[in-house]
Image (cartoon, rainbow, N blue to C red):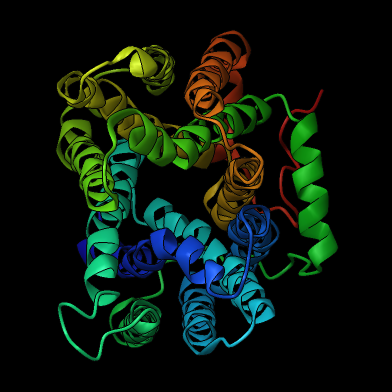
Length: 413
């Protein structure tokens, strides 16, 4: 394992996610200042995920041809421009343009995951994906807290509502220089024959539905992320209505969830990696998430809710890293960027749906029911994965030659 690129990409992801999570909780309140209603705000939030769906496979494909470092450099700079526009916005359409720019370039997570795949062996792949997940979690823990501090003029008199967006832009600019100076190129199998037309990436997303080896993984990712997105989208309203929690309390609650995910991906996963079959870990963890979320509305006291958190946060941490590892193993080293980009597109599609629906949900009972819906979606994903995923079919990537396009040697229906 090459430690320098591994450490460097973890820091790049942490800074990127810190900026993203810093502004995300504040975006609905910021949109209100431009007279956006709940439906428009939901569409605004979803626009990022929709653009990420389009951008992720394109960026991944570009990184397979030109290398990880230049693509990361350009995409992180695009994130900087998106945050900068957000801070200087004086009309609602500028918010949308900002999120669209950041969404297209925000697909760089697939490139970062490809870097992890580049520097990992089959034995270290799962726990190294856990480390990048831990960087995600740590960013989500610190970001909302930092955003709340920066948005409050009670802390510093010249802070205002746009200060978090300006600071996120500064973080992204720092990340540009960090990628430029600290991150070496890790891709040793650049495929110069890859076509770079956007339509080719869209075709590959559509072709993913014809593949026996990877389709169960992509469908499972969609269902798992969709269920978790329902939970994360509606749980704040649920906590407010059920337990009268303040915004600060809710932020601390989500930080508590994030701590467990970081512990899982940074420590627990490193202890169990290699000791259990990856597909068996995913089976068990998805079932645990579904059961825990189903019990969530039954918790009638905050103490019980805090006790319940590890029972779904730990499996979430395991599932995220392990299923990404399985996707990565399905193709050879020359196509890591593209396969992980398509995986990110399925995740983005799942994350785009709940914010749009959120604008139409106003009653407490509906909000409570949405948590149950989240558990049902994850349960469907667990059953589907158990029945559909065949590990002996999926692990074909290590024998693949350098193909001019993705999935050329993968078995189709």
